[in-house]
View 1 (cartoon, rainbow, N blue to C red):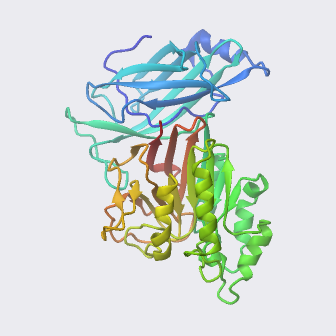
View 2: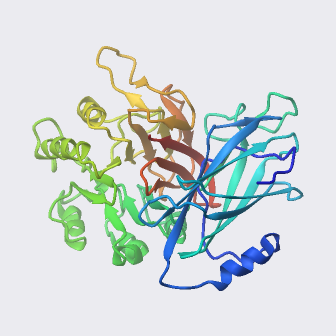
View 3: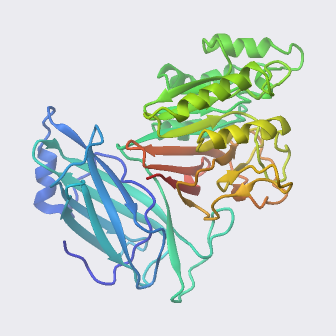
Length: 457
């Protein structure tokens, strides 16, 4: 493998994206060979890419790994890899090549120098091997400052000194990953339509609407905007307060939604390959109770217990409406939810708890409830963005689909990032179950405003 000296790079937290690139001259004859081979009876190659360390500083050497498997997640040896990295200033390009080992991996080192600038880092990778379909993937990442990152995920300007450390807020949009979008509190505004369209453009495997699907009497607006996703079988819903009461008849709108979506229960669970989803109904406890001894509580408890011992499940995600933990804003954490469910989530290995109700974005550190302390939950890992098997759930509030944004009046010590933006949470899970990536997408300008990664051995 050949490398240029003094190239600059950052810790890529994502896998390589989208197929079907235009031919690039940097790959010369190899590219033409790949594009000309369109045999339909060959197995597919699948990519993932991640850093072996989280950040890089000036003159540091960091190692990165490309992993290639087939569609059944089996490692593929002797795959020829051709890669290029174009830096944010557009004037520097580094190319690399190599062959995957017996574990389907290609590890390559990069040296960082001080030519880096904030902005987009573009990556292109191509792979070929006889008897497999060739693959071309590309990705775009945002270069940000690691040391100067602010609590909301934004960063300051570069200061040119040897202590500078860089990170990347990037996409994981990879044929080797499953993709899911989450948002609640939709309303019926142009912002709502922009959020829904941004979700559709990303071609997620599933969209989970987290309650308050419509705060107007007639829910037809929600049906209309998300009809195409529902027709494709990609749409799942949780119920919010306004989905269970229109102010006159406490159950009329609730019945409409149940009928429209053909639901017999408003709380449920399902598996999507190696991911287990639990969808709670915390919209209106007087109608559908979720406290101790309720049918819903017993269901959640039993369901999580079974999922935790299922060796086919790598990740457990809980979705609902009312938040558990929150920074100061319009709605406080629900005391019934907070008093019962975190203990279950911790006991049975829940990875993410995703809710709405507050019209803003918040993401906690991995948290563990501790009844012996009165100062709130205990932070299990203080890293701002990257977590190595934290053994405690991360709580995300994403009531940002289109309703008017709620002001944040401070930041709780257990909250890692928070934003007053409209958009949605995108979660992508590598098919081999080793990595989960999340990012908040601002639907007004289609940019990433926060990201996090969970690694599992």
